[in-house]
Length: 124
Image (tube, rainbow, N blue to C red; front, side, top):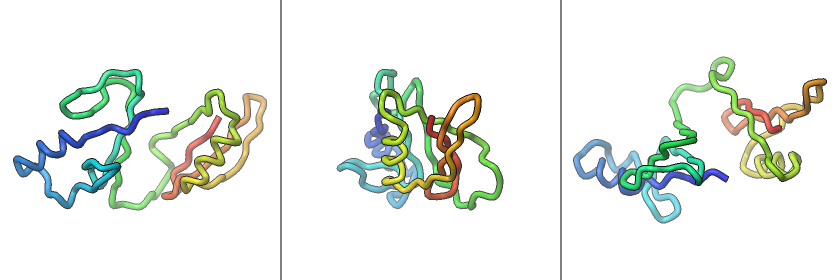
């Protein structure tokens, strides 16, 4: 349910003073976006109207050139909210994630998944 940040105005400003090359951008949903990073923000939280950058709950995803070499430095747990966990796992699989294993312990149940680059996360 997070909203993808719209950084079109920020990108235009950065490009106008030569702060980044045009090749650092792509077109996404009819607007400019950074090629190697994108953020999502909680739709109920404030954001800077001039840059589109969220000022509350926000996740930034940035591509790096190095491949994954060890355990994740950050672990994300996704909660399916009021939908069944299975439907969220299916949605994520359709987006390119894979199921690593299903866990059932005294403390609860969850599904361990991997994104297309192999980073682990859990769906509760």
